[in-house]
Length: 337
Image (cartoon, rainbow, N blue to C red; front, side, top):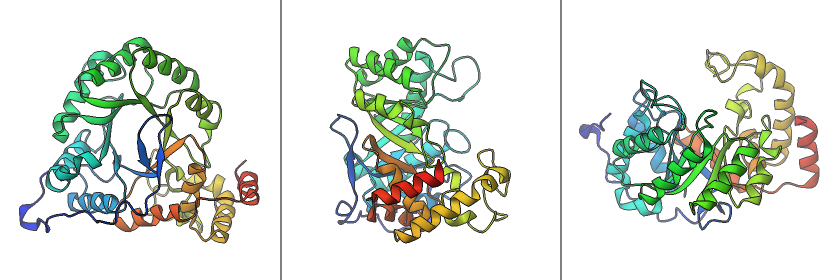
């Protein structure tokens, strides 16, 4: 999708205040500092979306000090379109700021017909990244992930492809996503042997989905790898949206495959109790949910989506109060356990 030249806004100049309020955290034992909140482009940036709004959100994010933009080959819809739109906006607004940005993409899900367009083979990963770079008009990404484990391809092949991608100059660092602790440990060992900078594991994590606490965070710490989390608001449950029932225009009220009415109803009492704790902290529930994740030392950043600049600004306010008292943590644990 092209930006309409007839509605082209005034040239973008980033805010001179952009680095004064954002919190930055080190990713594992690397030299990389990430904004505590990063912007994910999974939704709201495809060809079905308003590119002007997408551009406004990206500008707002950078003005707030968010330097990390997270994409994947299949983001859209349709697949690939989020990268195309991002490339268009990057070219029009952010070209002079490229060295201030930390751009990620991934490969692992189905992208094209035939046996080579999915999972974790060397052919798929390298071909996919080449396509992603072309869509975004980039020479390299800052980090390239294998998006999900492949049970049939040897881990040595997948990690070897990531290592060669760095050698080729197509990515500065590599990461993995959705790997269990044991395979994460094996991946780290292989990449260490290959002298490849493995700095991030991207994992789903929220108050309602705590699987990373069962070994993964410890594994990452032992291997000097940072964690960047997604779905921190549990598909919107950890917001004010469902405090008084299920709105018709909500994700749970529609036909979403990620959230349904039964799941919300099963958690509504927890949501209401957590909202009371957040209110006592002077936060919205969504802000407390993000802060609760960032209390983990292994977490370098929390990925959020945003459909508007107002939503983005509201979530970034989570950084205004990142400290929890022991009593607050006990109350939260009692609710969510």
